[in-house]
Image (cartoon, rainbow, N blue to C red):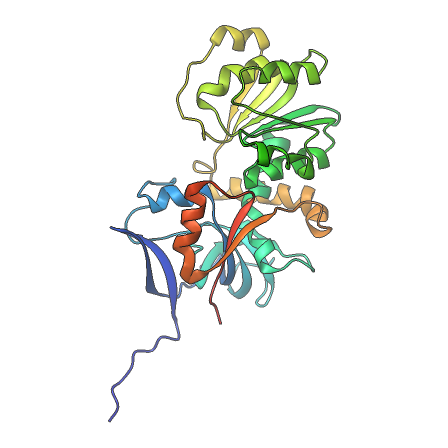
Length: 336
């Protein structure tokens, strides 16, 4: 009699962080809860937060040995929970949430977007995190008004490129992007930047003031923070807004309180790590209400810097760690 083999029809291959780093394992296929969608994952995109989790750091409640990596995906709905009315099995969908780097994942229905016709899974996987992060920063917390000026610090990242496009789409009169890399800086105009600056140059706040007729910029979307905050306040208009999205330059720095008071700047911190399920659902609803037409017609898009098959996820992480990419890094899954 041949040996009895275990039933693997409800298992899946997943990428986890173990005690030594990246590992591929077999895990049980997850089941959707009442408000969830079971997704057959077709493509995923890497984000900087994934590097931190892989290195052993926590990202909100996500992290630790055994954690399935990843937070951004595109695929097909396989099953839906009993309270889900907005998605049905077979729908092409994209979204964000924990445990994305696996053949199957579950997602809250409120974090799921439909994939418009004409957009493939790889391109769709690049969109959810950038769309919702930067709509929230530019439109909701940044309170951008038609005709205002916007500066995106750290604009050559995927989310930064999306911020440039959203600002232009929502009516900004002047859009400025920063990058310390000359080659990347030269490409920011392709994504809506009217001016590109080098934030490592001490003269950049004066460049901003010259570009705005001495007034300063109305809204700064800050992905750098750390030692750049005082220069940002110098570049800001009186009654300007600075939205602190990221801390790529450091999470600590000198803060000129007198300059802050003088400029009467609104300094706004944002993160998803302390938001409730209902808050994130509302964020995603607002994002899609404002941006769905532009996603559908292709005017909001991100470049794919590199593509890897799932078994080369380690190489994809190495490319992101080297910071040699422009746009998004996409990994194609092996779902059958």
